[in-house]
Image 1 (tube, rainbow, N blue to C red):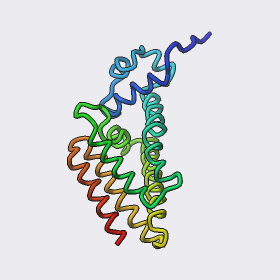
Image 2 (cartoon, rainbow, N blue to C red):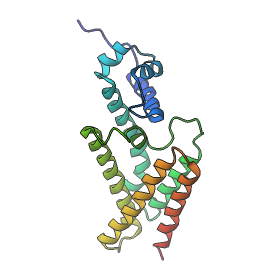
Image 3 (cartoon, helix red, strand yellow):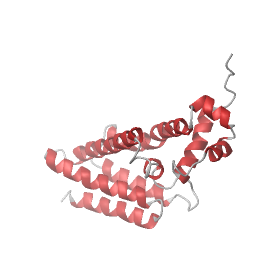
Image 4 (cartoon, helix red, strand yellow):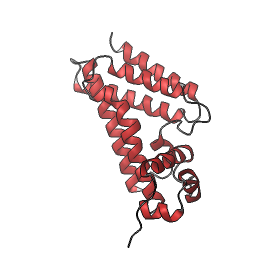
Length: 194
């Protein structure tokens, strides 16, 4: 007879998420996960199969609780100010992170930098995240520039997507430059209004 689970799965995943965010996938050991979650290796294996299962659960939590709520301003009834508001909120989030916070930068970009190149499942998650971010920015730009051609919207989406991803990578090592990148993106977006 299988033993019943005697821990809060959500809390365990949240603790693991912070470890992956701080150390990346390859830099995180099972011992790190045991320490962070307070669970034994056997409990982790019984609940998540392996380290990759814990990571996959952490990624899903990250998408549901961090990424998608932030993108809602772009996807749910966007206004002409949604893109600027999104970029400003992202810059503010980076600015308010403490230097020792494990949640600096983007979990997916931080944790999968080396892994995505040789793991098809992780590469698919990263492509999906990139597409979700791109689609959200595009919706915001369509609300801001309703008469722009699809080619113009696509070009501007690529530019702002590149700035956003660059800022998220920079946030890990240089928050000043990450914020400056987002402010440049905001100025560029404002200039497109003219």
